[in-house]
Image 1 (cartoon, helix red, strand yellow):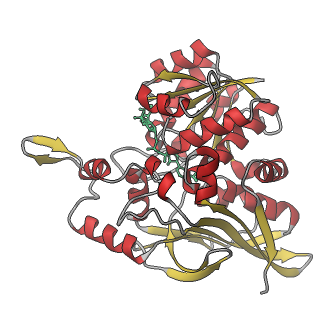
Image 2 (cartoon, helix red, strand yellow; image 1 turned 180 degrees about the vertical axis):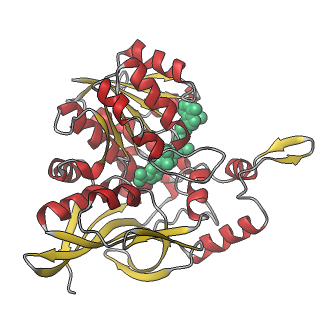
Image 3 (cartoon, protein in one colour; image 1 turned 120 degrees about the horizontal axis):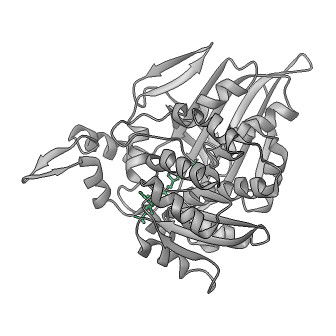
Length: 394
Ligand code: NDP
């Protein structure tokens, strides 16, 4: 039985808290901490009395975070705050002797660039402390990495190409809103695209490459090539890989709004002077946009995220598609969050569960595809994210 500290009481934090309570056979004590105690209180009030404890913490402060981890005796920290806090929370875990898990890789607040370098650099420190850090245990990154490992283990001698296909067909009824933290989301989709082919990264303009994919249970949708962080670790760990790309669907209205906001400078992350005050346009935009954690109740439709892998098995070409479909309304009925938060929070709890049970426990810093995918794939079916595997022609 383990004590878990969840940091970040946002959309994903809500799902993680609800699901940890549903996994009380492993998590005997659950503490939810965030920058604002009111955010924790709102989630606490949705759960049975005494199911979780709450605390206030500024996770940018390593010492304060380490003190909290020690005071509650946490065995593991699930970091679902923002990517900016990854390094300070990892350091706090090292100081206080707790395992670590997150769902998004480190990003510096002043530069829209995310990479694993600084988190991987802590591998030796985690090994020396006999602690584990599991990076990217959300859906993408997260489940998509596990799908790749599952394909490699059971279906291929060598995987040559992977396309990660992410479709959110949800409708929240607003003209414009983002389904998770607006700052993180808009920084991601307004950046240059990038994919990996024949050993090198190829950069594209934002939204330069698109294709139409027929997503099961959703239909044909335009999908745009983006850079996404799981590709950085997958190119290292999937043998024989020749190309990997990531595609995400966007509706026309979303893209038009985004282009307009970008053209007028509202996506800027540098400070500007406004009426004698310094403001960051992107942060001001976040204040104006609907809070993603309030979208759940209004959102209908489905998400479909998966991977298509092609390669060789027994000297014959092979191609498979593994995907997972979630229904926004069903997620809301279960844990009061829409499917984007749900599909991120559930894998975080599965990752933490496998670590606490010992099925996925090795000291050091690891990515998802470095572990046996089978127990994770079993848990996905048990915990609300049933998946489908299809063999494709050609
Ligand atoms: P939200 O903005 O809804 O929630 C983030 C929470 O973090 C907020 O509630 C905020 O607290 C808290 N927080 C921010 N700064 C601090 C701090 N310094 N100390 C303590 N708490 C802090 O974001 P989401 O829930 O949508 O996303 C959470 C994470 O999940 C992000 O890292 C995001 O990138 C990742 N993600 C990963 C996905 C995947 O598939 N891998 C997909 C979607 C998201 P407060 O309310 O108290 O101010």
